[in-house]
Length: 213
Image (tube, rainbow, N blue to C red):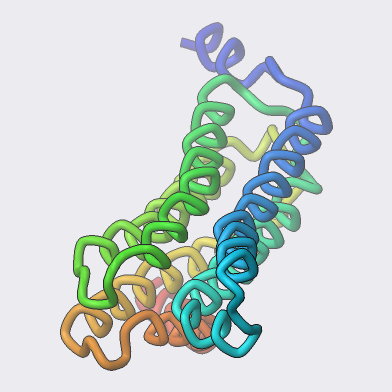
């Protein structure tokens, strides 16, 4: 049993190299978000359209681009703050990171779907916001894994608890935003601005945790 645990927690991957790889993948994903807008600018220009025409025609694409860019940046900042104190990465933790990266890389595709489909396409909303929920779930799983393996990092237990509360808050608010977007089509993707409430919900969850503890 001890040998198995030792093999599992041994640093099979260098933390610094893995973090550099993750940073590069996230940067590429954020860059890919702009490509559909670049193509639409060329199309309008070739057709002799104006800037005002382009802005009016691609309002939904612009909103989804900004939201996705900010949300990916938010996820990356959470990840960076956590992994700056990680010293070793096991194979299991690496697979959790790969799953997290998969959801990040998929988000530009989900963003392109929201910009290309009709605003009333409920499946597009489910794919888009569902991708973000999946990212938050992987982030939560990574924090829980690190809490169970303190030998891998130097993060304080209180910081991990706060991060877990933040991930739970993110999942909850994304789910609420998706529900609002589906039930109130007029609001649509603007419901994602509910994510601004994440710090407040995080504090509430931490208080509830202390009371139950």
